[in-house]
Length: 81
Image (cartoon, rainbow, N blue to C red; front, side, top):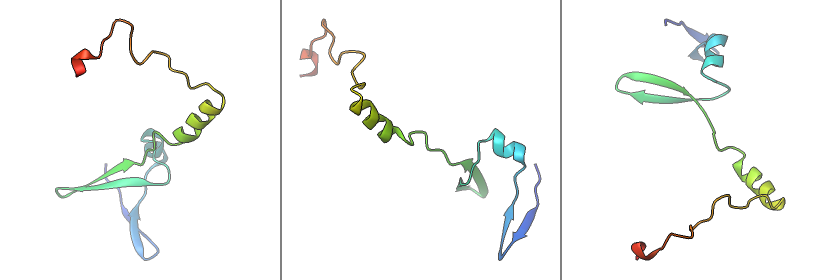
């Protein structure tokens, strides 16, 4: 795909079509990877964003119980010694 480099203030930039922004989930920031003469643009993702608040809320609600025991009844730890 060919795009034009446009002047934006004292800098230059490129514009992405709305369909590309939606398809690749590009919001306000991207990651630029400079690699062997190429510029790779990747969407900035934060997959674990908000987990700390969710875990605290689960703990406050006593909803953070283990679903599977750490050690099964027929499991021995001897092999790890």
